[in-house]
Structures are given as C-alpha cells and as structure tokens.
Length: 62
Figure (cartoon, one colour):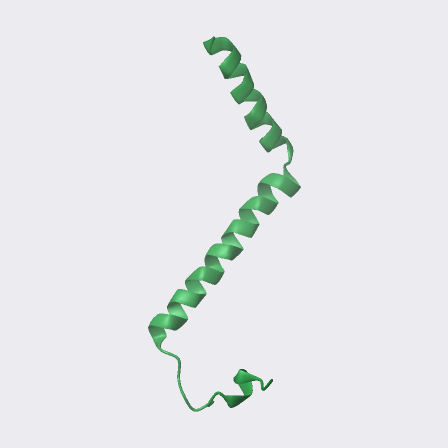
C-alpha cells in the first residue's frame, strides 16, 4: 500500500474556510478537555456535589 500523503502536492493551498473549520474543531476539543479536567480532575467534589444536590432535591419533591 502506498502512502496517500506522500502523493499530495505541497504546492496546493488549503482553503481558508477549511482551515478555520479545522481550527474551530480543535479549539472545541481543547475547551472540552479543559472543562473536563477542571471539573473531574482538579475539583472532583463539584461532580459529587451536583449529584448530591440533585438527589436531595428529588427527595424533597416527593
């Protein structure tokens, strides 16, 4: 099997629209990782607090 990336012509320029879409996707992934890191790794009690509050509110609604 040949490598298709070696067959690509380096003189062709990628459109700016495509570049922007890819960069936006990468930014979104980065933000998602940052948020998950913040809430799950650095402050894991926030997740448990949210679940505990939800359970407490469910009990009082009954």
